[in-house]
Image 1 (tube, helix red, strand yellow):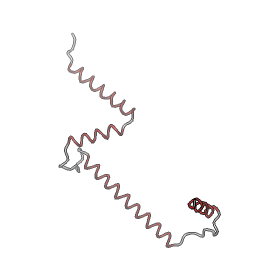
Image 2 (cartoon, rainbow, N blue to C red):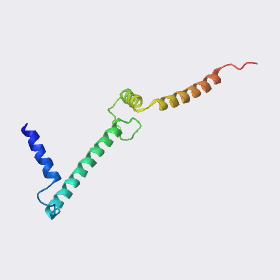
Image 3 (tube, one colour):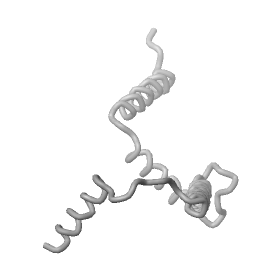
Image 4 (cartoon, rainbow, N blue to C red):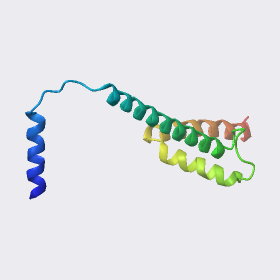
Length: 113
């Protein structure tokens, strides 16, 4: 119950403040700029780490680790393919594979005279 009264008071202070906002001080602006710069650096580090992990997981990349097993990596790629595609993508892949299989089978069939 006490929290509701506190939130009501906070809402009244926001909607009808007792003093008018006169702007930020230079110190507050510097602090906000430093905070945003720090957040940008953390985001850059996280993106670089994720990119490096993706390159290590890619078997076709030159940065792929030699210790990783190829079947494990292919299984991971297949897993990402299965989860990252929608129905239209599956239909297009199926259509493409069907056309390729038909061409290969027609090559091996005997020609009728």
